[in-house]
Length: 394
Image (tube, rainbow, N blue to C red; front, side, top):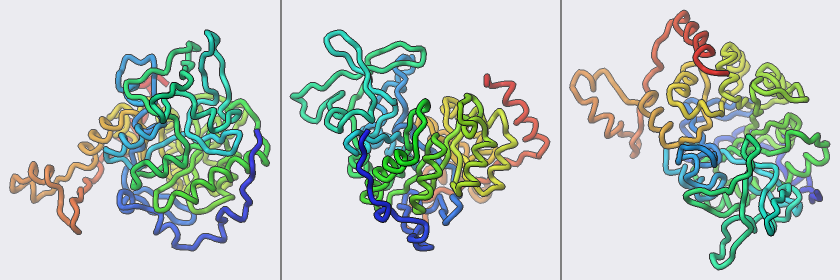
């Protein structure tokens, strides 16, 4: 793959960022929820992040919601923005002609004259990439899109509401501006990348981000440890999170194989947080305290995050946010479980129901007063944490 490197002087460095730069990064949607310093990213509200927009596509699922809208599309991002979420998460790769595009899988599958073929995203030009799926000109028909399922089956990528493939720049231009972007820097798990290649890819992505982000909240995340460390060195404006399976899967690179290793990567590289597969947290709940004490932010992803009770349990444990597929259902459940406004005065006067509907007026906006977390004793919480691995198939 040939990449034209953006000169390193064009990308902000640690010593080029003003001390108060973070104050201008956040829009109204997010400004009261997060405080970002030079080293610490701390969420003072529980974050809900839309997975690949309004949810990933599980094409063989019996749940129609998992096939409702094409994942990682402008349509999906804006559909998610209709709900009270803080970010959408999506995957970014770079084409062979140096354009950051949004696509999850390492390869794209299609069929030509009855023969199925696959091509790496990084081996396609931008025009070739965009020629798959629906086209901007409705008179044109692009290459059909297929997808390989986890069990190896190849199926048509059919969803109820389809949309075009898109670039990172398009997302900045066409997605609701107050919605934060959790940009996953996508690399193949089975390839060992050299420093020069990673640098070129990351600088290409950073150039688009810095030219288009304006006040939009941004988080970078990646499973690739070297990419995480490098993007942190290349810029200090936006927080960098290390993605990990939390020990639920094993890789050749030991840094990917446990929460403890993820913690080391973050501390040694000055990263701001960890995004763990939720089962890794439930399997090793004591690590949550270590991560918090290290002043790192902890988010999770995984199928269990589509279960409201599992999400609420994480809130009690100290997890600061979740990446979810069922955006509408989880935001509604969390508003009921966490943000339900109840005051002693409202209860005494019978105005509680009215308060729930109207919120609390202040500064010209309707604000929601957050309840305190339910009070569990250490013994009770310890029992719950020990019980979870027995109830959930890990």
